[in-house]
Length: 369
Image (cartoon, rainbow, N blue to C red):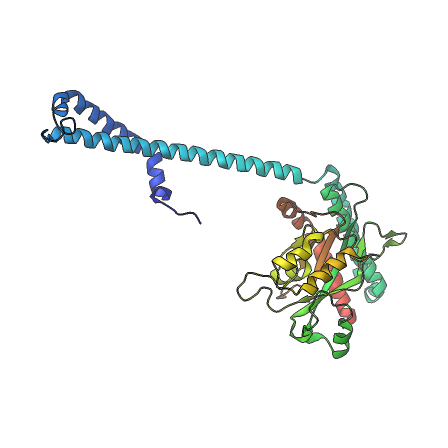
């Protein structure tokens, strides 16, 4: 934080810019000039023009005091005006740059029309599911509706970014499972799909895991005749959620960006380039070298080949202290929604879809209980 001086005091700055202060400085200058005109001989024959043996004349002293005070007053007023002008210019430049970024992140013309169409179709699919009791109890129908909503989200993000043809967008759901809720059998099965943990990690000491549901995943290249299919590139995966997500000194992370960090912070989290994620683990996180190597291998392999950048959003339910699930969105090109304004514009628009997905998640959990 920069050091503040008396000139940073708002009251002082306001005074220096006021008309009264300008009038006072002008008056002092006028009085000093008047004294200099009327008592020119007194001033010339006194200190400092006559050094050493010159008399100390009260009129001369008064003239010099007024002259110096008027000069300082004029300088401070002028300096404050220059400072205010520079600050105004800086604010204008910042607002212009912000407007430029905002214009650059505005969605394409066809986005809003597509958004309205996708919302209506997804809402209709969810409404039909609620009305059909047999479908609510059938996992296949429930998963199909979930993928339909996820497919709509992936396509809307693609349209929002105006990505070129061939760019793959995908969306999936990870459900949070507290470690206290897992049976010994489930805990054993979890070890086969839990990724990015140190070999000696005591799973029982974790806060929980985020469990990827392959059946609740899809991508823009996995549209089948009967609707969106599950993401063909994904493999079973669970991510650890530690109790403490930073080291004791607060300088290094103990939780991965994306779904785990979105869960811990309760807000969006992502990474703009997965090719650099392993480097981040080595420099900014408190992970063993084996974890960074595993992350590097994952995104270089088949399961992570289409995941060049990603962002995760917590699906927060009212009345719950923690989100029951996380929505993941990823792209085959880097810098997904990397502009801050992009997220600010898009997240509120996704709220209806988050509500739909929460309903699907609750039904899935109800079936499994």
